[in-house]
Length: 260
Image (tube, rainbow, N blue to C red; front, side, top):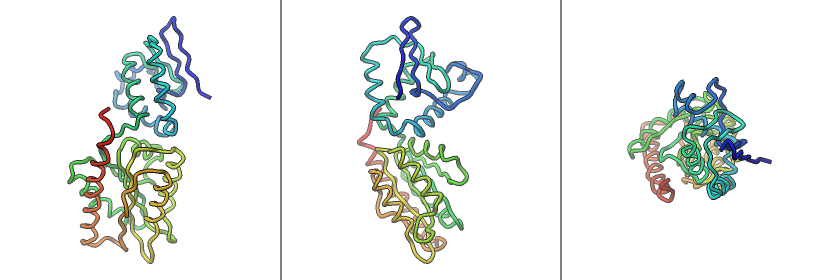
C-alpha cells in the first residue's frame, strides 16, 4: 500500500513513490541538483521512474493528485521516498505528473528493434527517413545495446512506436519479445504501435508482435512490414513509405489528446 503524509507546520508533503526518481546525488533538493546538473536530467529521471514503475497506476494517480489540489493544502516542499526533494517549483512537478498520468506523450516516433544478421537493422534507416519526411522526430533504439528501462521510458514518452524483429523459428526474435513481455506488464495506454521485420525461409515475427500489441489494447498500425532476406532497393522504398504512412497515421491519432 502507498500513502502520503502532509505536515501542516512545515507545509511538507511526504509523497512516498509519487514524484520520485532513481537518482543518487549529493544534491538533496531540486534547485541544488539543477545547479550542478540540469533540469532536463532531473525530469528525464522523473519520466524514467514513472514509466518503469508507476505506468500501470495512472488511473489512480490522476484522481489522487486532483484530490490533493482540491484539499487546498499549502505545499512548499515534496519529499518522495526516492531521489530529489522538490522545493523550488512544486507546481511544475505536480502539473508534470498530472500530464503524464493523463496520457501525455510527445508527437514523435520511437523505433525499437533487435537484429540477427543486420537485415532488420538495415530496415530502420529508410523507415526513419520516411517518418522524418512527415516532419516528425524519430529515435532509434537497439535493444541489446540499451538498458530495458531506457527503451520503456522512450516508449512512454513517444506517441507512436515501431517495433522491429527478425523471424526465428516462425516467431519474433527473443530479445524483442522480452521487451514486449515487460511492456505488457506495465499496461500502457493511448499509444499507436506497428511492427516490422525480416525473415528467411518463413515469416512469423510481425504476426506474433501484432497479436501481442492487440492483446495490450494499443492502437495497432496494420498490417506491418516484412522483408525477405536483406532489403533490396525496392524493399528500402517500401520501408520508406511504411515509415511515412505510420507518421501520417500518428499525427491523426495524436489529435485526440491534449492540449496539455
